Image (tube, rainbow, N blue to C red; front, side):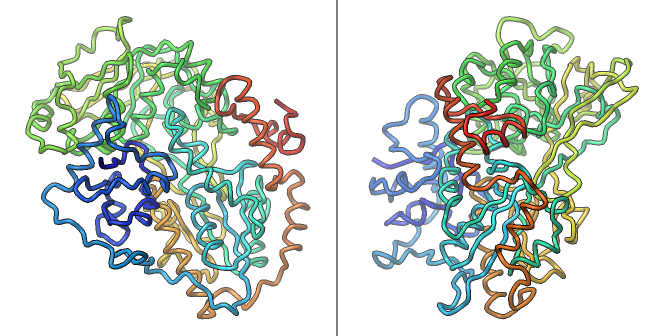
Length: 579
């Protein structure tokens, strides 16, 4: 029986490297790699050896005959990828896969002095870069993060009902106490130490700071209280220490979400899903309490284009279709919507909406109390966020930090502005006013300038050549700050391979900033201790992990996250103290 890849596929191709018969595609050497939503097992070639399942870091691969219920949809999805395609060539020998070694030069000469490389950011991009350095060179790696805990978007951006996706973090955690790794968490590059000071103590610096701000819609009223970036909402339910526990108000029956990517679907699923099920996850305690008391009955997801162009992935839509106790409805307000669904080719994204009820929704009626529901409204866009005219207060809004080193959240005053009472939507025969008390802007992330580095305001990225920062010898970028906010966790593996390949080539060619850094590793540690009294090292991070897991055991959950910086620092210093 063949194996099948399912919803949580991270696309990092670890499974491709171990397959003895080349039945998993696209491979890193194929043009489609990185552009597909997931990898696929060819049922005609699979020999049922299970090597791919053993190698998968997120437990996404299973024997097809073991799949049950909604998961069985992935058997057909895997097979459909190969319809009309010629089978790929078999490996040329027992250890020679047709995709071969990556094309990036990633080996230093054996007599080359060990490099000292700083990696700023401990999310997936930074950790794939660190892993590449540790596996392929004798480099000494300094891991730096603005927050006192590692993980980045893997910790604070993955929906809590996707626990398998977070398992790649176990692979990264093994690097934290590697003998050639030194860790300095809670250190903000640009505030606590400058980019120049960091460069002076290392042969090279790799910035993996992500895209930490949200994209703005730019419609009137989008700064009202209750108009919140979906990125802030995601961080709120993931216990990000810079998002207040009361940052999100769930007292409205209807929530409107602008955007139809995976973040929009994650938000909708959490808002109307079963809070009892979330109670077995690592959802923030304050979010669990708010969701249990929430009055939300309906989430309306606005998509500017039609269902055939939706930005969400197939797997996330399938998960929405099978959400227990929640109805999924397509608002059939435009004849183009039904036509796109009915005429979609098999396997097309719109075709997955066949069988989903389509109705002309009566928006003058209240959401009701029978069952909760999610409404997909395509060919629609917000034109204005409507307020109640009352004086405003404080709104928790993601504006990003003034410095590099990771994402940031702040509290922005909105004096004189009222609360959200609805959203005016265009796209039908006439504008439609949707009553709502919460408006989530799920239109994407955006990178912020990194102190001391050039920045492209249009793309929100640092200009580079194959990861080498323009005009800054010895300085490199990886991840979303390099390529923009696109691609999931696994996309960072190939991205990191390119950047580290460039770094190593520069080292061999003598193109780094200087023959050797002026400051020693010991001098850098002293500098950090002098500037940041409570910086967290690998031992402190391990203490945080033990504390959260112990709290989780007490509650029957995988972990209970510490939600403030003081709690994290107390745990790093004294085990369970501060819990």
